[in-house]
Length: 67
Image (cartoon, rainbow, N blue to C red; front, side):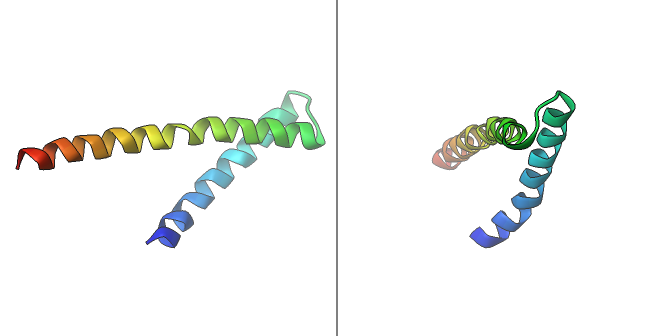
C-alpha cells in the first residue's frame, strides 16, 4: 500500500519541482540556485499534507468514538 501511495504522489511532486524550477529560471536564477528555489517551494507545498492528514484522521477519530 505504501508503494502505491508513493507511486501516485511522485508525479505530482515532480511536477511541482519542474514548475518551480521553470519559475526560478524565469526570474533569473540559474543552476543550483534555481534547483534550490524549486526545492524550497516544493517543500513548502509538502508541509500542507501532514496538516490535512491530521485534521482528516482527527475527524475520523471523533466520528468513530461516537459509535
